[in-house]
Each structure stands twice: as structure tokens, then as C-alpha cells.
Image 1 (cartoon, rainbow, N blue to C red):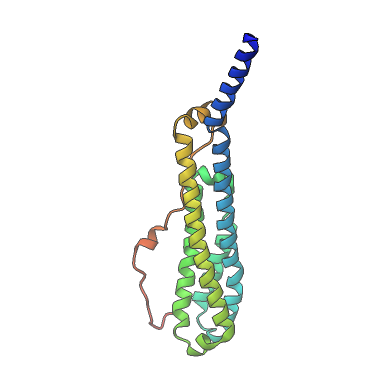
Image 2 (cartoon, rainbow, N blue to C red; image 1 turned 60 degrees about the vertical axis):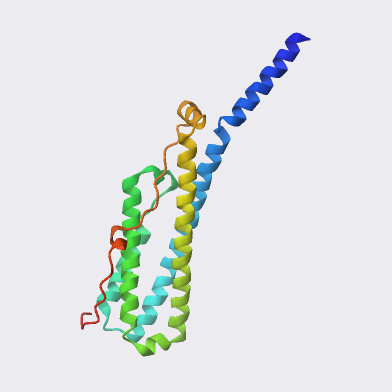
Length: 199
């Protein structure tokens, strides 16, 4: 009888210890990081998908703004070629390269929008207006997705460092800290707007 009681108590102790060690919660939080990253990638892909239509619409009204249109097309190509898998979220350099490519695309799109200001007919074009609204909505989605990704990373990074999770992680899981999606360095400077004759 006593032996059976000791076995039951030992089993309860082990079950309680495992529930409190964070083994499952850390893995769940890592999956949340991956899910948030996938949502961010989806929003970035939506932006990339909208750009060819936007460029074609602008091309018809402002064909001689070729350098700006070319810059947008090239930035889009580079951004879509720069891949970052969930496994690479621990690599600061890989994430920095990905962010740089996305930052160049954002910058090229900003220059394109400045060009559009010179063409009243284009601003009144319903196709362009619809694309512009979709792009603005997509930029908002990207911003929200970045914030959610960073929140998931913050929760996960803290989880693998706190006790007793840190012990469980170092002995069993070996999960690595994930990198945050940071603002591009050029986002901290005020953009220069040039309404000169450069094209």
C-alpha cells in the first residue's frame, strides 16, 4: 500500500515538474514566432504582387519617369529574391539583409509616390487610386505584422531565458534566441523630396 502511494506521489511530482518546466510552452511560443513571421511574409508578398500593376498604371501616364519606375521594379525583384526561412530568424545578418531589401523597396515606392504628385491626371485615374489605396492598406498590414512578430519574439526570447525554462532549454530543447525586425537605418532620417527635373 505504501509503495503504491509513493509511486502515485512520485508520478504526480514528475507530472507537476514537467508542466512547470516550460517544455511545451517554449515550443508553442516558438511556433507563434514562426506564425507571426509567416503573416509578415504574406503581407510583404501582397505588396510585391501589387507593384507590377501600380508600375504599369503609372507608366501609361508618366512614361518619361523611367528611372523611378525602373528603381521600383528592381527593388521589387531584389526584395522577392531575398528569402528568409523561419530557421534563419536567429541569424542577425540574414535578417538585416532581408530588412535592407524590403527597405529599398519601401524607399523606391516612396519616390514613386512623389513622382505621382506631378501628374494630376494620374491622381484622378480610378485604377491608380484603387491600387494606391490597396498599397496603403498593405503597408498598414505590414506594420501591424511587424509589431506582432516582434511581440512574439519578445515573449519567446524572455521565455527561454526565465527559470526554470532556461534549465529545460539548455538541457533538452536548445532553442535559440530570435532576432527582432528593426527599422531600417534610413527610416530614422527625414526623406528629401526633390521636385526638380530629374527623371
